[in-house]
Image 1 (cartoon, rainbow, N blue to C red):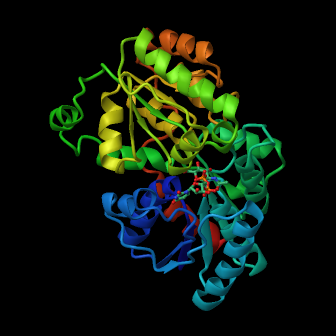
Image 2 (cartoon, rainbow, N blue to C red):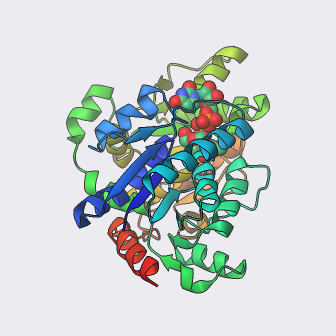
Length: 361
Ligand code: UD1
């Protein structure tokens, strides 16, 4: 079996890392294609280094462009790579434009397609990621659902049950591998923070950043949470968010909210594990917070990760200042003893083993 993985953004690098590693450990030939959707040092090279992943074999340098152009460019260039490399299976993860472009390239070259993190649904068709993940799920040959809910969703939508494997989420593999790697006390001292006496925040979703009212509401909510709960907030902001804040001339209350660039994965994980609260609109951080026992205030109106809400680890707070503070207060007072619904830390190995079995059918 020869595997080709196609990825392009920070979260895909993190969540594909266990699959790439499992291929290497099993001696499975593997080609890593990076679309170049994320190209900033912090969102790309720094993450590869941090995870000790070898650089991609091919980089398509697609960069930032409108969705249609981005997907079309990735599709065309990936088709050419598939024709050259002739993999037995193409693997994509999640719901980005890179994942969709890679998936379509597999379909157009009649190469079997595997989707890691299949079956997630926010049921919000205004999100580009929702449209991407639905399309990928319905053209994939092999679907790796992270949880029972995701698997049941696929079955409800008529996906053939024999092509679905419940694998667990690969992020759990990465968390277990890397947790405890960075010495907590040194790191907290470096940032001037105390364990469980600070909150972390991230904001990057298009529907939040490109909508002034939502962006202002979220930033005000984060600042008021810091003040009212007496928790300094470290906000690690995506480049697009920083750009928008500057454009709109929004002032950040620097006494309570410290804005930092995207951090390395290990450093961010170590801070996260010590935080009292996470405030985020990220999909992946809802999962990570839940696994790390950190309550998560989700800065969205819906989520494709209902597992985290069901176990009491997270709540939807939307983008209004007062709702964010109130949800933060409720979660802050809650015991952190929920079970981890996202997997057992062996998803990468399971995915590679099951790929061999499914391809042999
Ligand atoms: C993409 C994914 C999203 C994922 C996120 C993680 C899609 C549709 N969305 O969103 O699901 O959660 O990645 O970060 O694929 N930019 C930089 N440097 C970079 C990359 C982007 O400065 O390395 C800026 C550019 O101004 C760009 C903007 O961020 O226009 C948005 O980037 P884009 O790749 O379109 O989507 P993300 O918001 O990163």
